[in-house]
Amino acid sequence: MPLTIDVDPDASDDYMLDDNGSFVNGSFAINNQWQDLRLEDLQQTTLLGQGASGVVYKALHRPTGKILALKDISVFDAEKRKQIIKELQTLYSSSCPYLVAFYGAFYSDGSISIALEYMEGGSLADVCRLSGSIPEGILSKIFYQVLQGLRYLHKDKHVVHRDLKPSNILMNESGEFKITDFGVSAEVDNTQGECATFVGTCTYMSPERLEGYKYSFASDIWAIGIAAAECALGSFPFVKDNGTPVNSFWELLSHIKTKEPPQLKTSQGFSPELCDFVNGCLKRNPRERVSVQNLLDHPFIKFYENRNVGYSQWVPHIMSLIEKDRVKTSTNSSNQMKIENKLDLLNF
Image: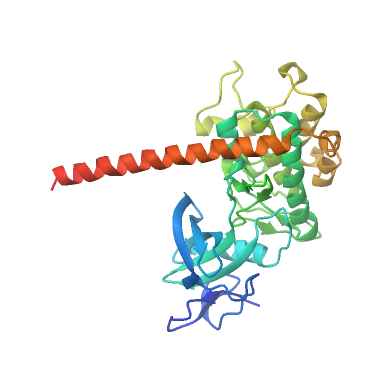
């Protein structure tokens, strides 16, 4: 069955995408959580981000006043069409509180618009950038949520995310963390359970992926280990033999493929539980890596599960840092635009 996409009701033709990412004639038939959600009721207000898979806007649903995120992706590029199919197939069939919620999808003016849950707190990458290293108790609470989402993908959907990284883990104002961006995810066969396509963000790729071997769920576990180490350290965990950061992209790829994986140590001030949690993810041999269920049952997660670690105080503190950063970024962008406008006048 082709995956159908809700279309602009004023358009002369309806479209849908088949499993190969090609357009075929047909009527719209995609369900969403809001049966009356229409593209014309969504007003774009703020640019939230821009990446390889599209542009994301903050949008107001005028009839209800609810804020959504609206992801726009051009349909003219063949590779992006495939990504659209992957993302919608995953979103459409998923129901998990640890994944960013999907509200609907629409075709209009040569692009697909995907309406998603708005996550006010930005990404885990933003949190790390603004706060530096994250305390272990807080980190445990965050990764408990991330692992619940990953378990759903692995166990219930048989899906390898393939692009897990801090920028694809989003936070809302309540401090809930959820996985997003399924544009390069892949459903694996239950018998072999392997993928062979080279997609995703290279810096979080496992060695077997960079070397071109087949891979499976263990590649997501590697990404979890890198992300957790990065959050604990406050910096990317790969360093040279002399302890200085690996800065060159090609040097980093070579480092991942040929050097021993990064390890957290108790001598760095980390608990044995956190060290074991991270190091169990970062095994060069994917068969030696722990599973997502192993991680959820790990002492690093279990120890803090019912303990008060100050999470309810940490969340508003981080939200205030994020809001200040947005104001600063908005001011800098506005000043840059004024400078560019003045230059345009001078060049007229």
